[in-house]
Length: 417
Image 1 (spheres, rainbow, N blue to C red):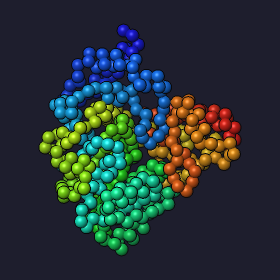
Image 2 (cartoon, rainbow, N blue to C red):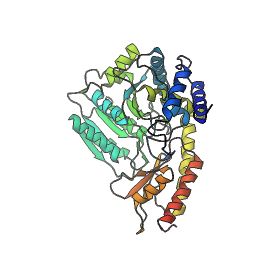
Image 3 (cartoon, rainbow, N blue to C red):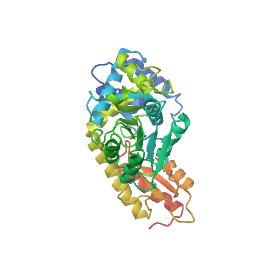
Image 4 (cartoon, rainbow, N blue to C red):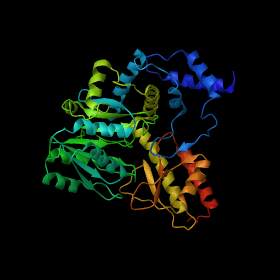
């Protein structure tokens, strides 16, 4: 058996080992033959392996990628069982009651889920949203409301600090017409972690019927968040973040009692979260073509997430990654955009060095050539770049990145500390 065949066999065995007991994997020979025959013609067959130090898509395990090779029809009984398992697992990860909360997966990136919540949970008449933003992804919430012609008030906070809970309380006390308050948990443009639970308590205390919506795109699965204590009605994230799946679908964890009152609100057919939920409950199927390969890969990712110890286990690894990165970059003389009291361990923003030889494009390209992919900056009031600590990366990968950064800085003749 040649090398390609051996690798395919190993990956297949690794994948089937973790399959959910209620559904069967397709015949091995069909998977094996497809992988073997098509490998030589594959578009990416000569692409080098890279490590992604980005906030998503991010590096995934070989077994997660291999799981995506399995093909199911969208109406197959086996795939229907996979959908049921996926929804159940995500509610478990959220650590909420299945009697009170449900998971609604939706095709598309995380922004699709964000817009689906706005479409579904904001009434066509009389709806008004309070958007709390301290970065680019908070501003995206406002852009969605603009496109939908949904009335909203945008409250902006400094990009280098958390949302101020006392200020939120003051805003809500002065205007109790808001039907929804929305916030980003981890503002990925900077790395700041917002005090979501404290905000949720204030929202419900002042306006009990106001829906509280949290964009937990880059934090769910790695940063602890108590949905019940934080009075969260809707939380969204996507497959390709801290649970380490591949892009293709996102999901909302929704409080059933709130979701059930949203029928008829949506201005969109495909982004109607209530209709998606209703159809899933009745048929266990998507209304429209589901991302079958991505969802199967995600089930493998969830299995690996559980084996690592869930939220605490994964969060601990990300923290270790972050600590190694922070110490190394400090040794090189890089300055962080945030101070210690505001930052988390998902992604870190670094200010550009004040060196005449500095050029981010060159820096990025030279790292990329070495197999390390970082991320451009997204804050508005400083020139920064970002390095993620999440994904299928480990302390040794962080050390490898730091070694590559040192080499690149030397090549660019950038003075280090």
